[in-house]
Figure 1 (cartoon, helix red, strand yellow):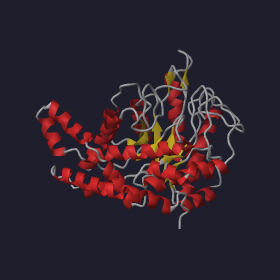
Figure 2 (tube, helix red, strand yellow):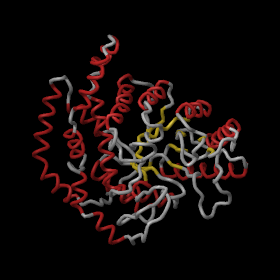
Figure 3 (tube, one colour):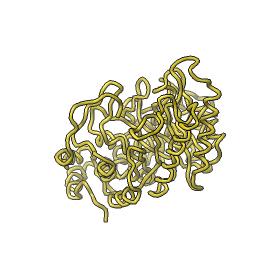
Length: 430
């Protein structure tokens, strides 16, 4: 039996307040969708089976390059983080796995696995860290890691990634995500070609250490912390990496890692077409890598990304099973509330994309009817699918209104009393 952090009677009492309204809203939406030959029960079943991983680091308070302001009841270690992650899943029933970051979350794998089982959580992709230094590390990553000019520094970074694979293998993970800040800040600082050659050689060594049933995700980002050039700066370079390394290598798309106004949904379509879409880090952005809550700024773009994913699902693309993960920084909100909101917004985009009339859309596309093709997408996007999301949560034992139920539970006040307050702010993003 799992250890539930939000009492079942709290969820039940809060759901009882909203049950009648949900029943009415769900029936009304079902009637509306039926007029378009859409079975609401089929959509609800698909939504209920769609899951997204939460990041262990996301339940802590984030920050900027300028400051970090601690929040109440911040997790002290990975076990506190897992408890906070379990709260999100108990209320949304959409986040049964956690993505760990090493060395931040490093501890005995047996204890990690036992804690996960206790809380009803599994583990998603592992994340390595060679973009910052730890106090006990022999060589610094100030001037790079997997692409460093020094062979010993590269070997240290490779060894760290292999350690992440070993930890992940012990707890049931099946993927490793590699993002690094390697690049340059001045013209002439690095030889672009040699730097990339060193990176590919390092990644090849990591690739060799993958178990047969694992996948390797490389993640692109156009800038930061390197501001003149970045080794893995865009999806084209990322595709070259995955293609060069082999069939277990894929591209991970972080929605915030692109220039403003980039057509991310087309990038997704290209990677699907050539079999190299590995998965996502879901968030949102206004200017750059803002790590905002998913769907908080550009919900239509999130829908358009899912339109491509559902299109691939509809076409039965071979080997199509992208990983879905959240990657956010919460500076002014309760991190648990933000992750609850993001999980629901991601499911919302999926549900809306399921409502697109694929036959009608293809007809308009083939007939060069640009306006009606666009309207077909907008019609699905404009549909309020909240009743579907709430019903999927309720049937799985979650909350009809997860944020309201979370607040009613008093969980934040409880952990704030148990966990020592972090005094004062600090500089830096973590």
